[in-house]
Image (cartoon, rainbow, N blue to C red; front, top):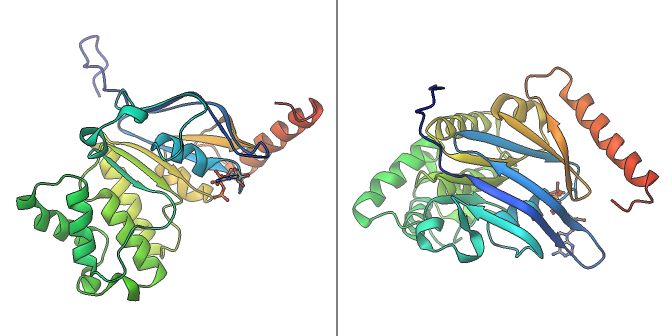
Length: 255
Ligand SMILES: Nc1ncnc2c1ncn2[C@@H]1O[C@H](COP(=O)(O)OP(=O)(O)OP(=O)(O)O)[C@@H](O)[C@H]1O
């Protein structure tokens, strides 16, 4: 990697600056700063309800922040147009698949939605089917797919157009070991080619294999980072969460 002064600065990745989004009752995310750099897999880990999905929805413009800004490639997501969204691939919540349509047709529609030109769509779909091991199912209706294969379809639809910005919420959900391996290879390759990748996960061992950075979320805030190469990641994670819980309780839970 070039380190001289002449190195070209990388374009901006995905950035949250001072973002807050609270729901009735106070849950949500608070004062979040996060920068997912191009060429990096950045993982979010946290307990159930910590705020990971909420953060990702704000990043993707699915939820509007009450304070702060979310930007992708330097563009505020509230103002992003089709040229930005065509470079984004995401899977947050259930995979988007039309039950009546085949795997191949669903992928062709996802390619169209991501502005892949018509002449390239068949090749893109074939590539995605091969990449995620969906060949035996290409002519099957999405309705009859197993849970794991529906997840493979959702991942293929999110990634087939080679997005520069990738956001995946718990992407290994439902995947068997071979699906997990295919996903890991796919994300490694895409980050290697310059994509900015944000994933959430509950599997610290998986995250440590894949991510260059691991941010820890607790009670709606980013509370620190873990070193993916450090031993005993699980122990470090729980220690960080416990310390944060204790410090907030000591302050009456105010911050
Ligand atoms: N639409 C909503 N209305 C009210 N509260 C919400 C809403 N969406 C999320 N929350 C609350 O915000 C908090 C954060 O939820 P979020 O789904 O972001 O957590 P998470 O870290 O993704 O959890 P998990 O690991 O269980 O998927 C939770 O307390 C949740 O109940």
